[in-house]
Length: 417
Image (cartoon, rainbow, N blue to C red; front, side):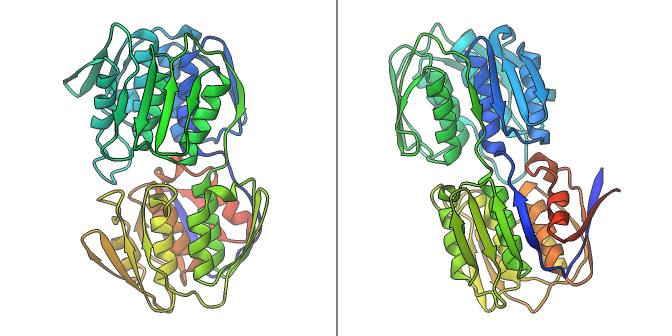
């Protein structure tokens, strides 16, 4: 196990290239199970979660080849309908194989998934949707067992907008008999990216990016060659680092249209932001103004940027209120930030943050993926040395983040514990 050591105080400058989006890559790689033949995916990030999903696809019978950031997958060998606990426990996104397995093999047995400890995130909405499509569902010994004589199109209403639930049911319905309508569907760019890929494969899907998605089932799909969209959360993390360190950073290979809420809040605190097609230029101001944050499903402020913005507000002028409405257990990083001198008070799903003149370096423990990034950001602006322990969470969602920060002038290194 590694730790990351940061010496704070440097003003970050230069260019940083954003990697492909993990949350787009995972469902798109899984969609390869829906067609025979070799799919080619470029701009795939080198992350633990991506390696885990490739391992799972191999186990299920797919062929997988990797050459740098290009991954080729042939789903024609799909032969196993069971995804075991050992393969699924590492991340929640493994549940995405459920829809394609039922669509192609008419059965699936998938272990209830694991991942970051940031909330319950139950999969009941996935299962209710599959039942509406004509599947039988049983929960036995920690596994979901699904079977069907053939999926049939139906109208499905989500009580709560769910990203993986929307993705799972799109992939299940794409080969179903008839028309499926998903209402109160999630609207995230990663869902639009998945639908774009599926339509290139021959699917007939409309409405992605809105709350109503219509899927007309087709007989079969064909393989494709596509590029994974940029990671909007990684881009947002580096934008925050520029604001925090009063830096001057150009974010390359990003999609500004996916980041409206983050860009808006950064401008409100005084950050200078210029947008040029797939590039964002960010210059931090001498004084950071406080701003309130409320996390919401897309296009609202993303929950995956809440921890990073909390660091920013910890050194801002005045008081800010941060409300977490997406996940009920996503303030675990607060205790670690307080060890560094942050003044944060939690009440229910809200955190009151009073800006302090400076944070102080300290040993801290990363509790989940985005908390890991927030603690590195805190280390960048803190006085002295910060040691971030248990950074295995970080490797699930950020590709070589310490190398990218180092190239921008940060004093940062990864060392074995």
